[in-house]
Image 1 (cartoon, rainbow, N blue to C red):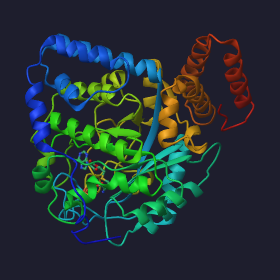
Image 2 (image 1 turned 60 degrees about the vertical axis):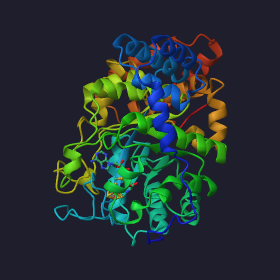
Image 3 (image 1 turned 30 degrees about the vertical axis):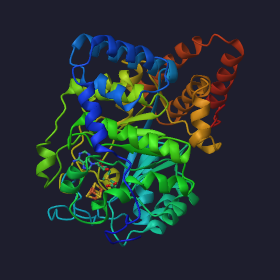
Length: 474
Ligand code: SAM
Ligand code: SF4
């Protein structure tokens, strides 16, 4: 891995801050008719321009905000139906050379106990996660010179190698690690990662430089071009994001959108997923306890709704940083992927005393177990929990997936496949109560199928699963 701070000497920024400010100015105090026109256009699910996104965010009329929420709910329902993908983060290392002032893993944080998992420890963590029923993991890493691309690739192999009892196996490993060079990304692509995630944190350069004072991450342009390098290396599912709380959220949403547009223009495909972490308290971080741009829950819900309308076909990922009550509200307006039962430090899943501020990255807002989260999303919200990985395993990624998504593919394939993975969970891992709730729910979902052939197809597979077959999808 490269270690100096001149990584980006030949790169240029495609974030035009003057243009963003001019558009924000123009969008301020918008005419209600303009807001309604934009909402009407958004319902066609063709996305919105940065200016249109700014208009929706700068509107202060609460009635129009409610119309925004309704539009987001409608777009979400039309494209994704009631499926919700579940995953867990797995922290591999909290060793880090960077000095991100908001993060507990910051190199200057001497109070943090540092740990990098060995292959054996990774296996132990994965076994615990598999025994809970997880099939999709997000591996998370600090950035340290001794932990290069080859080492990261080995940790991915370690995860895929673990198969435990029942249907225990991880079928998709996504990665959240520091940006690599093209060769490094090729190394990751070769071991079969799913999505490569990297959040730009803040698109505002002055703020970026203020909160990243040392290490590779201090290089704004090197990070800005990370997704381009990943695509060049053949990783066509990339996940972008912003850390909300560091700077003006309207500016950040526009920065994210300009970033996505540039990626689409240069590489032919935009982001597969968008994440929108909000700053949470973290050990030894003043800014994480007192975020300079704290959004209210109402404003944050607006941000998520606007992201849904701006990126209709990208997965929107919500983590356990938010409380369980607020997570339920955000689910309605746009979220499609949810982490559950998360722990945020290396070794946490095998640690009986898992609430450990001295090792974790930030404080978790939703501490419920996976099984509890499933009961709640099924019985209170009517969502199908899904661990489906069929597209990724059949090579339907990047532009291929985006093109399919636009033809109603998600409703036709992802929903029934979600049901099948839920059945697998219920058979192998669900508590008695979850199994009771879940099996009743499955019956109701199957009754919704208007096409008798399709209904039979799903029913047959569910019956085969009851007899012991696993990993079935259509
Ligand atoms: N080290 C890699 C990097 O910085 O890109 C990846 C791992 S880092 C732990 C993953 C993400 O956690 C960061 O991109 C940042 O957005 C988020 N994060 C850091 N500190 C946080 C905090 N205090 N609250 C919420 N999210 C935080
Ligand atoms: Fe290290 Fe990432 Fe945390 Fe920054 S955000 S200190 S790079 S782990």
